[in-house]
Length: 135
Length: 255
Image 1 (cartoon, rainbow over the protein chains, first blue to last red):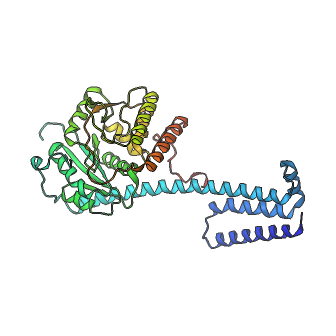
Image 2 (cartoon, helix red, strand yellow):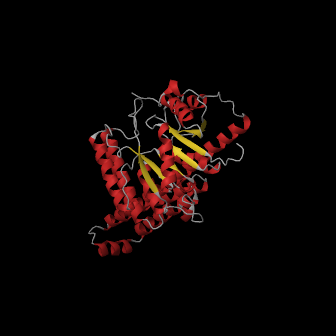
Image 3 (cartoon, helix red, strand yellow):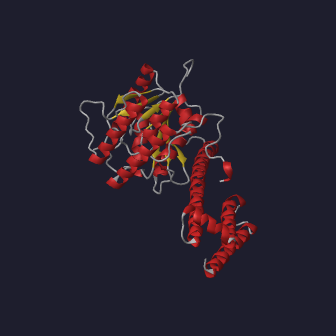
């Protein structure tokens, strides 16, 4: 493996790791979301440094040029991360739905408490209505 | 009221930007189904839907943002459950359902002893339902599939004109499908061992506003989405959340 590509890989993986740690330190990234990222960055860094292992993996899966195996693994992590986020987004939108519903129900309850029914009586108007709105 | 035991009934009117028609729907319910309390669920409308509904004398649930018809109707069920209603009928805010036919739904519920009654456009001999061919195909396909799965004829699986009793309200307050809920709701009724039946109703073509399912692109999306939901539902071990199960939106598994 060319030394240049190894240097590039090590530098990028280290940079990713540092950025992640800094984000967690500043609490801009929750630990539960950072774990998968940190794991990915560590594995990529490890494989960049430990060329023999990368070579073995590449041979095992039939990749001729070892750095390509690194890209393959990185791509796998990206897919897992994306799935992770899709799940998180689904959960969040469900939670947002529940919150919106609770909020609406509470607002209505407060409304009923604070201003007792003051609706104008709307009765005996069937004739002038006719069913809702049509033709 | 004296000694009469009154059953509490709620009409849930989902409305999204229906300021033009929701007032008439509310007044029509008050006139033709006066024993029903009217609850308009304003699904984050940007027009005067809420004001019009309130001025007409309805109670209004105002969702802070647009949830789509599923979440919108579900909050109506939650309201019915919270306030101890015995029956809830869904009447769309665009005026396509006729409040005078609620009595038929009630009669069917009493006679057939079911938990949900659907108003079906397709059971009358002289029905007129001008719809694009794509939508008709979709409805027919769903009707065919659902009838096979639930083991009884379902002629109009996309109808939103439905009456529920307490059991139906409780099930759907807890869990109601998201985007295009009517078809999946029929499946849920089946899974929860509830019973349903259909009665023929007339529906008015909407003269204002647009259907939530419009355009062939959306029709295709709707069909695929609902088919996926049907298949996923069939493959699911526990189709919906029962009391005591993990909450569907629990922050589990560190995600």
